[in-house]
Length: 239
Image (cartoon, rainbow, N blue to C red; front, side, top):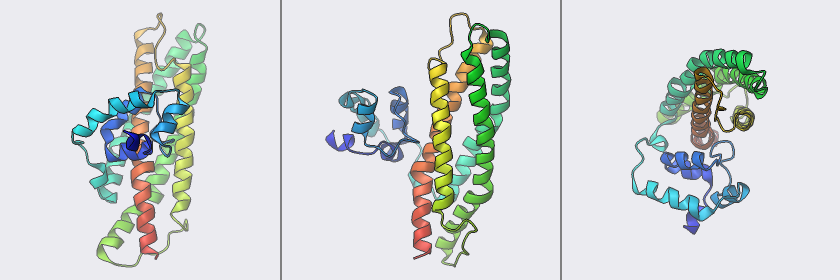
């Protein structure tokens, strides 16, 4: 139990992805803030570390159905793009529409809707650009590195210099979106609509919560699994 308490949150989720559900339920950030020990994360949020661990332990008795750590970099990149990038692209238009509508209809009684709408529109625009930078710059080079490593051929230096440069930029942008959604969650009372909310209002909040959950998974796969492996391979190819 003490060993788990001293383990970093991001590493726990990387080792067994099913633990993400427990961290989400306790409000522990396993993606952007995954570099802290479980004991520290619990202390920051005023949680009983032992209680959190008791919720985690049964998960380790069951094999994780998806072995993300067993994926090659190319496979993981393709998964991120086809599952998470596609989800973001498909969900943004409808969510923008719903947030705009409920703000127009309910904004006079619930002024927080204006800020929620503004924050999400900012996230939508930022993520759209962010994902394209990954798809057209960083991800192709990561795939090329895997090919170079497997086939033992030299790889030309990328225009961005060291791979730490684009990774640092992506992680900073991840932090920005994580913080933006923490504000949205607080403004929406953790996605609990008020008693006078119409069905569209409820749908919009449910979609926001789903969007945040997917974003956490999306960022976790990059920050805690893909990027560290890419940095190791880059160092190996340039040693």
